[in-house]
Image 1 (cartoon, rainbow, N blue to C red):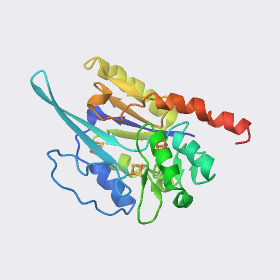
Image 2: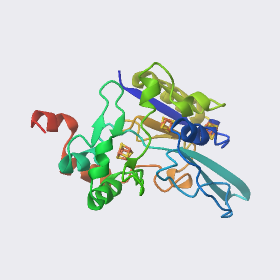
Image 3: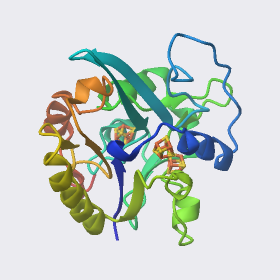
Image 4: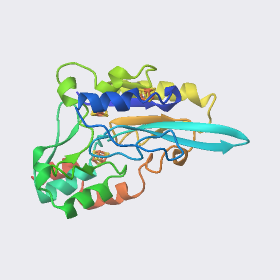
Length: 239
Ligand code: SF4
Ligand code: SF4
Ligand code: SF4
């Protein structure tokens, strides 16, 4: 059964437990950080930071507002990065049929710099990164090792405020709509981001751009779908 996450940013306290838990479970090295005038650290996702809590601080009507956004791969229902990789090297990027997770395999080492750049520029959320030492392309894999053994993804397991919920897609989408209805009473701009096209659904309480430049998929997703077709189209074509 397809799985999904709900990331309810209204419950996030920016403790960064999810970011650390991801790194620990994946056995990824620490990232050198420096003070850049923000609490967000490191500055961006990388081959060793697959989950990043983004901070956006600004003044609105004389008050300081702080938005937190626990960023990661969205495991797109029609994944543009997979379509690009499939054209170059079938099997480098796969979809786990049971969960819908998009997986970068060992074969991604063989993808050229040009293909990687294409994958990254076609990802509506600017997610794929390359490990310069190993050549592997890196991103969240939905903790498939845990999920396929009946456990929660490490970030969802760790979150102390239940800002990250994981489960069957249908149930998560129902929960997302219920929670949205609650938040709309207080926050008229509350919204679910790209909920029909992703497996990681964000619930935010204000404009997407006040969270992160790539919070909401831009138009290029639509252009991409027109160019590459859907998984089902490709299947019928034998692709
Ligand atoms: S968010 Fe980007 S990297 Fe993740 S599946 Fe979608 S296109 Fe691929
Ligand atoms: S699902 Fe696993 S790999 Fe993905 S962000 Fe969460 S902890 Fe990291
Ligand atoms: S663990 Fe939960 S509360 Fe803490 S930063 Fe991550 S999403 Fe936010």
